[in-house]
Length: 154
Image 1 (tube, rainbow, N blue to C red):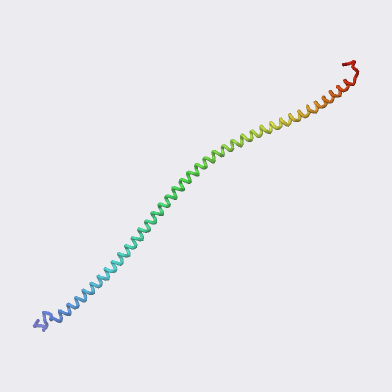
Image 2: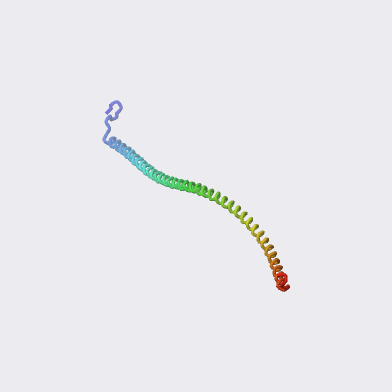
């Protein structure tokens, strides 16, 4: 006991119990706060893990889409190459067609000339036929005269 002030220097049992209760309550409060923080931390960790899973899923989907895009790009490139080859073949065939058309035009011209010649020959042939008939008629007429004439000039 402090004689000067009349206070006790050594706390009494009640004071110790009060202080112990207060410290216990503080400790319990701190533990509660720690548990809440740990719970919040765990929740945050779970949320982060879920977001990481989502990001991994998105990465997987993007990789699949990229693969599909690359395959499509390869297919388009192949089709483009095929189109180029087809165009080359069509160009060659077009050139051949032009050549064939030119040859056909030349042959048609030759055929037209031959046809003209044939028509001219037919006309000449008809004229000669006509002349031949006339001559044949004259010859028959002459033969008849000769047959009916007296035998003196035979």
